[in-house]
Length: 190
Image 1: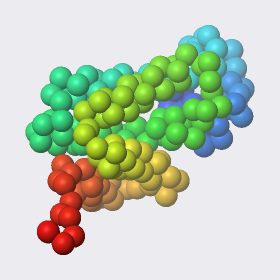
Image 2: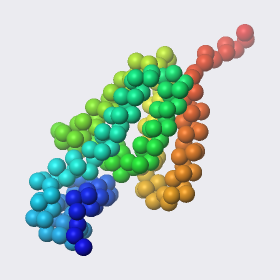
Image 3: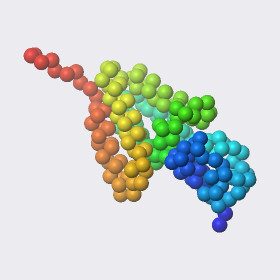
Image 4: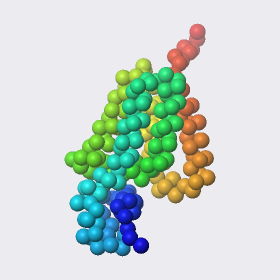
């Protein structure tokens, strides 16, 4: 059986997300794939090129989601569509999101990680510009960041298909409740 570029990406992603990008060598990926290091280099010119190949699909998908959000604004329908897409994104790309959250600060000046960080900043800027109160800003930050962090834990990495479906439903319910438009609180004594 030959190992394809796709197989190498999957092996590298698993190793990068568990052992860490800095701690993973091309030799280790080659060993896990049952190949020589030169065979890995045949497909990918460097470890950074392999990292880019592993995380680029997630980055591109998040950018598509953000583009759609920016086009729809925070209308109720736009908010619901964004939450659904966001939950599906973090469920599908748990390993990649794990890397961005846990390794991003140590991978400064790695172009593909810089690109991911730019998208996160763009998302934060969108919510900062399109929410009226500090409470709403905090709700979005805590809800989205908390959901991403929780779903990238080792426990959630092991979800089976039934658990993923159940987690998706639960997470959509929770996020929808957390991010419901904030109304002005009643003043006591009125």
